[in-house]
Length: 366
Image 1 (cartoon, helix red, strand yellow):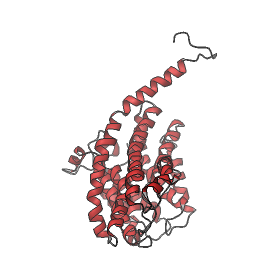
Image 2 (tube, helix red, strand yellow; image 1 turned 30 degrees about the vertical axis):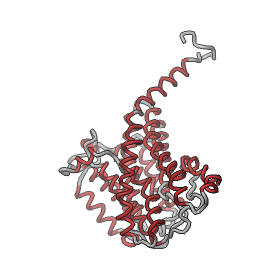
Image 3 (cartoon, one colour; image 1 turned 180 degrees about the vertical axis):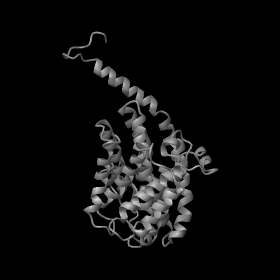
Image 4 (cartoon, one colour; image 1 turned 90 degrees about the vertical axis):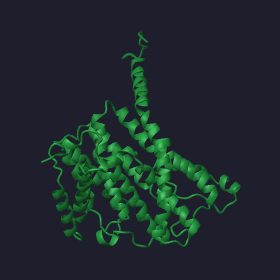
């Protein structure tokens, strides 16, 4: 039987397309509360107990767990890994935050432009949200009459947990806990919260952590045990069926995360004719994810009242154009230069170590 290790070589896979579908699903999911209010049930919420957006984010984290662990394992140094991660997250994020604060905000605020620009919240919006920890949801006078105010970009909250997962990969990698013999400790740590939290609305902080970190850990496990994990459509179907049968039981969240994570990896590595051609276009999923929410809020502000279907129809092409622009003009150029930046950091690190001899004196050779 084909294993993950056999298919994980190279970039000829379906993951760019899978991530794009997941990012689009987040846009679709948010259309219901943004158009009709936060109390309206989103798609899949009743049938699965999880919103469509939550299911999409689970896919993101499972795929990320696999490839981030692989990336760290194959990097020449920790600095290479960190530069790659910063280059992937921050340039696109900084751009959308600047556009939000200084283009979207002045256009949609109900305040006079002078009052808007004098408000300190305009100037804290970018640095607070770049921190990923202390998120600032609103801007002065912006979207206050929308059905779901005042959040301008409600999707950003997951990025903090993504960064935390990156840090966990570094920590467990450097301490060698992520070796196959000790990796079960990581899985147990990721699973443990599910046995101590109530499952219902999935609104608490601990629930959010559990829902996001488990698929990441499962994706990482698929890489660590890649020699032994089979890629089987029958197994994916069986796990999804088991999750459906377990719906409502205490074990359901675990089986759901396992089934969705495995199915995502199976689909990503599947040899389906024609799907690989999507890779020629680029990876627009991150741009789709970070631009969708503010675009939908803008459309609601301009057209309210509007239904979810109409909101999706208008927002999707606009968001796609912004995602393509983000990838082409910001993300791809930055990623293309990440190796040069990482090399410069390594040189500086080496020189810094050589400048000081063990006794604290200047090294004569320099």
